Amino acid sequence: IYHTPERVPPDWVPDCAIAVDVLRATTTIATALAAGAEAVQVFSDLEDLEQVSQAWPAEQRIRVGERGGKKVEGFDLGNSPFDCTPERVKDCRLFMSTTNGTRSLARIQSAKIVLAAALVNRAAVVNYVHQLYPPTVWIVGSGWEGAYSLEDTVCAGAIAHSLWMLTGLSVAEFAGNDETVAALALYRHYEHDLLSLFHQASHGQRLLKLGSLDDLKYCAQTDILDVLPIQTEPKVLVAG
Ligand code: MLT
Image 1 (cartoon, rainbow, N blue to C red):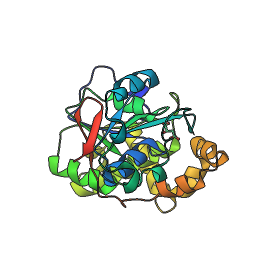
Image 2: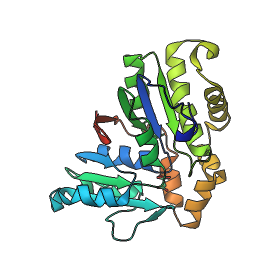
Image 3: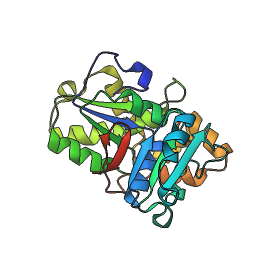
């Protein structure tokens, strides 16, 4: 586990990498794909998103832009998972750029297998990774502009804990680095009340000030969507 993309070693190529931005990008990606979106294509840069999405048929194109927790002016959607209803997203491609989530996806592009995970689809991702049983798995939190985020670390801990239970390994054999041990401990402390941790998290408080309590409640739900967001071409995720 790495708490933020910046903490990922520059020269290491893992077999499998999982991006986590539980408030809210990877929760929204999982929700959109579960609702029938054709794909989610992620961009770090808004202008790049605008240019590439122009070439897509307008009736199958949804532009998702978020900065600072708010919808970007002129975009179709902000980054609330509640906007990703089947009626709205079915058979559409989401062109998405968010403050941090799309950056952690960009950082793990060197991996052979790239996945996006949140609490809502943890079980689907864990089961896939366990069957694959790759020698190395990165779980990379998105953080907030380079800083650590409680919500991404606890989500990474939730994923790691489920995977660890399935392996039957000792924690010493399983946990590759100190950040994994820390994330597992955080998850074990809050696993029965993840929402209370979201309320304490700085981005959780930012979203609450923006009136997004319902988003926090939704994002804190575990294993409710059986969807595996997997990358099929650079920065394009589909339901696996
Ligand atoms: C992020 O990229 O940091 C989040 O997705 C922001 C948000 O949607 O609140």
